[in-house]
Amino acid sequence: MTAGNEFGTLGVLAGTLGATSRVYHVGFVVPDLDEAMQTLGASLGVAFAQPMELPFTTLQTPQGPREVKLRLSYSTRPSHIELIASAPGSLWDFGSALRGHHVGVWAEDIRAEAARLEKLGMRKLWWHADERGDVASFSYHETPYGFYIELVDAAARRFYPDWFRAADPALAPKR
Image (cartoon, rainbow, N blue to C red; front, side, top):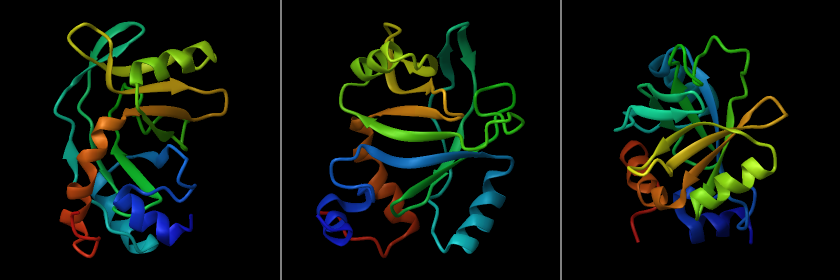
C-alpha cells in the first residue's frame, strides 16, 4: 500500500510506517506549549490541533496515585508530532534529561499489551486507571533506549479525526 493510498484508506490517523504499523505519533515535552506549537508549526509547515487538557488528573505510578494536569496538542497530519506542556515533578517534566520522550502505539487490548511490555522488562511508570485500578486509556513504559513507549487504547482513534479537522479543514471530509 502506498503512502497516498494508505492515507486515503486509513484517514488522518494513517501511519507513514505502513498499514500494519501501530505507531502513530512521536511525543515531545516542551516548556511552553503555545510557543512550541507556533514555532514548530511555522518551521515544519504543519498545523497543530487546538490544545486540550486531559479530562482526568489522577494517574497511577508504582509509588501510588499522583495528580498531574496534562495539556497537549498533535500535528494534524501523519507522521503525528505530539507536544506536551511541561508538568514539573512528573514524567512530563521538561527539566528531565529525556528529550526524545516517547513513541505512541495503538493497543487493541491495552491491559494485555501493558502486561506484555512488562514481561519484556519495560516497566509501567505512569498510567490512567479505571475504577478497578486496571490500565485504562494509556500507559507509559520505560525502555532501555532513552525514551518511553506510550500505549494508547485504540478506542481513542474515534476522537482524533474531528479534533484534527477542526485545526486543519483541508483534511478529507468525514466518511
